[in-house]
Length: 265
Length: 156
Image (cartoon, rainbow over all chains, first blue to last red):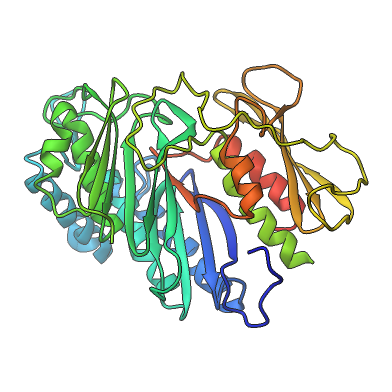
């Protein structure tokens, strides 16, 4: 990188873009042929547009969102966009494989459970929207939605993306870094949102764990598995060993760590 | 030139995002956030004099003009944050935190004790050690805004 820019367009330089959607920073790093091309810009815009559409459907903070209307019984699933059924199915699958540690029906102060697929939507939406970027030939990308990341490297001869993992007790520092060519990486914890994630079976916050990072083939499941492991507290690492993930890092409340073995890629 | 600045600014994005990166990335770090003074380096690099307009780059070789870009102040839950970067020719020579949540108003430079290692190493290697950061859900508030503002000023 010290040398003068190559005459061709395929080089290691990274072009970055940032937008805010769903109250989160959406960051993109592109390198390769379309890092700075019009096609690259268009793909980025398509990603952002789709994430905005997803937000309009799934935001639990908007009373007029499709998902809230569905929850209130104003719509049936058949009347909703096809994505709703897809997400709900994913949520049910996640609930099944986690024995209820993950659920899209969250407990409320009264007996009723509230439909909230947020835990599925973020990773799923980013993974899905990343197809616009994957279609850029000879171009690598790294797409982050609020700290959950889809990585893609078009040419295996190019360097892997290096992803830092934030320290759960000090978000200004990293606790680890991992090279990823293609795949998803998600971290669950409560650093930025305050204590928020609860075990849907008990309504209680997990104990013993500070954060869980999961690397998997897709961000969709990396995100789900990280959340499901996190709410299981002391059982996080044990449960992750039953999952088809590539690797994981559990940071415990006392600052110690457990890494799950399989190397990424 | 513009492209170079863009590239540089994108590199510095990561550097600033990472503030105090621990070098022991490949080991299982059991250090709590409190013990952040690393063993590797005490950052003995000569820091260029703050906010000057020209100077002969001592180790950079080319002595082109120095430009600084200051980001706007971002209100974070930890307090206000503001970042400034200094570009000389094709190199970022310094990253300065103009304001940080601890409330001390004097400049705290990246290559000083609290925010060390990665920045220095990266500047030396002309290469960032990480490309992005995975963390528990990050909201749109926060110091990233300030950094991004600085990058916007720099031409991204």
